[in-house]
Length: 74
Ligand SMILES: [Zn+2]
Image (cartoon, rainbow, N blue to C red; front, side, top):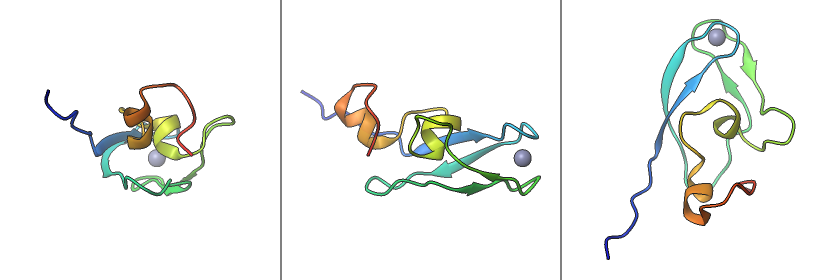
């Protein structure tokens, strides 16, 4: 069986200006803050989420992909 490949590039959508930017995710640390490259808004996870990729990313945070659940990533 093929090893499931992790997607490490997530497209973050800024909720303020709508800018989409590709960001590389780390597999072992959560990114709590993200500064938008366009409007410089400091993004924080929505309540209930633990990293900005969970809240604004196009793909789940890598540990979540491993588990295959909707659990929080950390
Ligand atoms: Zn923005």
